[in-house]
Length: 201
Image 1 (cartoon, rainbow, N blue to C red):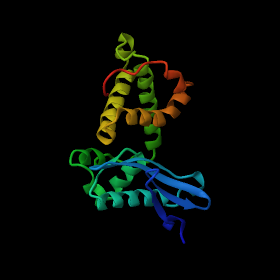
Image 2 (image 1 turned 60 degrees about the vertical axis):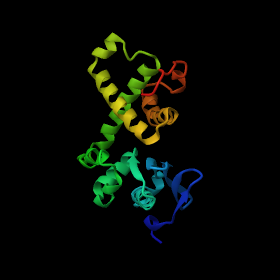
Image 3 (image 1 turned 90 degrees about the vertical axis):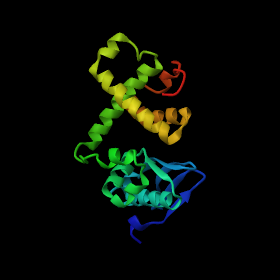
């Protein structure tokens, strides 16, 4: 059996599709709601990279969503890229999301760099947000801060469409921005002393 053809199971308790190969676990985590299916994250161990497993996980998840008649909200960058390359799945996106997602021009040579920069900027904004400094006059004049705020707020709006839970949004940002914060010599734990603003983002 080819590695790319390994069995994929739906671990509903953990809300993720899993592929167990050679002692490793590759997975796609999701959140299922009555009207939508949110693809959160895809992860393949380094030993299994480049063997088509991630693509199989995403295809399996999308086929599952189609069979359940659920709108797909892809938060995972890999899932977004996969959907862009496979028109047969475009119909699973909402009419509002479809043009924005499928119109993105792929730039494989610098996509990782662009994603890392976006995460760095959003982490920068999150630090300011948790410190209640988003209205600081000097920060507001900064072009980098303005870009960071725009990226963060756009992402938060899309996350709200997917999760409709502030706690889930906070958890998502914590997971995805933690690495960027670490690269700046900061930790998420150090931000806990700052109060979150009231209301939804």
